[in-house]
Length: 245
Image 1: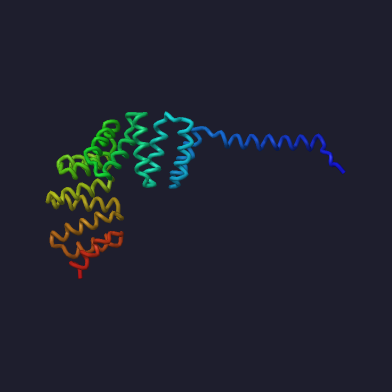
Image 2: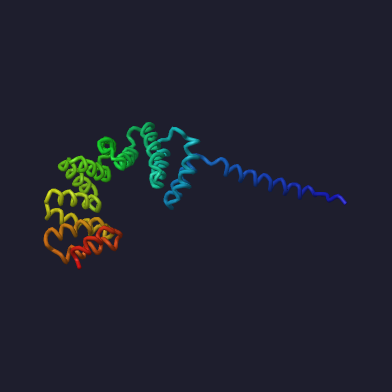
């Protein structure tokens, strides 16, 4: 026997169909802003693959938005996709020539490629457009140090600290520079400060241990090297075996 559907049943079926269609359409027609927000959310949870996917979708809808390229570049940078990140930062700068953060990250990639002069040029631009960018000053200082511009490096580290007085890495870098310049007392002060700000900074313990050793303070040196070893600095073990047993 043929089963007949009542008008009410047909109406319910049609309503359900329309509701499903509307929900599907809402998911399929996300705006660039929605993808942007979901990309930020995924990046905040360290889901960089998901973040890149969302930024891809946002860029497809808004291909001239430099911010989206920068954010995708940062996600790729965190994934160690440095070539992809470099391309995105360059695209972001092409769309917004005052994008300080893209200059800074591109400078970091050039630094990792040992292109020190080129990285300094990017940090210069980052600082030009954002004069309070402490990380750009710190990283520019590192590259100046590699190029033997010790005075310039010291100025950059000090400026980074002036802009952000709890910047442990800047204190560490200035301490390393001062120790190389045999400015032992201010170097020790900087190592102490770096460690007080970040008790997990293994390099600060390791290098302060070297400074203690140079000052004939064996017990303090060994304690610092032991701490550095505990924090994952394997080379500290050789110094412990040689000088502390």
